[in-house]
Image 1 (cartoon, one colour):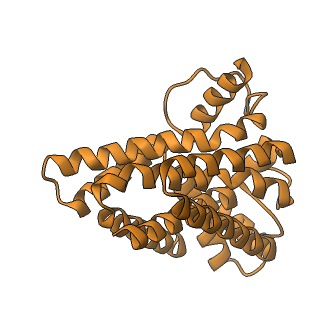
Image 2: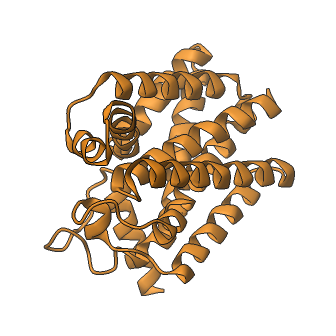
Image 3: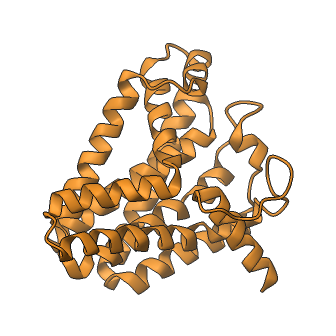
Length: 250
């Protein structure tokens, strides 16, 4: 039980801006094992975003404005960690002529045209989807989307080689197959507890397809994974799931 609690604290410290005790060094010793708690922390993040959205709706804030403010609150809570990865992937894959150029662009912290466009598209899709979800489904949908979006990351990390010899993904280490399997199972359980079995199944399948698609694209573009690729995959899956659920529930 102590190991699970330690992993939860490590996952919270990595995935959010909440102040948590952090050991000296670039990565905690249990960081790789803590991947299994990513869906749990994702569910908590989704619950916070959903409650903010519902709270704003309850005091008369229009649905679109409530959704925008709730998504903004979520970005503050997470430090826009995965959004940054999505933007870097778009800039690198869209602007680089070869593998080396793509990796160099992705390392650049400045936001380019492709990155700005993909963030705009992603935010607009999530905004419109969340605004369309009825009140009773807002929190469950966000819990499932955030849990499943983070649940695919260890599996991608196991399957993909590293694209460079340094960077966040390389320094963090690669989880083993058992940890990746536990993570996927926890993510699916969260989805099943939040949604009807059919919606949970479709959402889980879409998350898997999103992860597979991003893994295939990263392999072709840069030969493997980086931290930005994993962050971008989370955003693609989260956005796709919200759009799917909005279409089925609205």
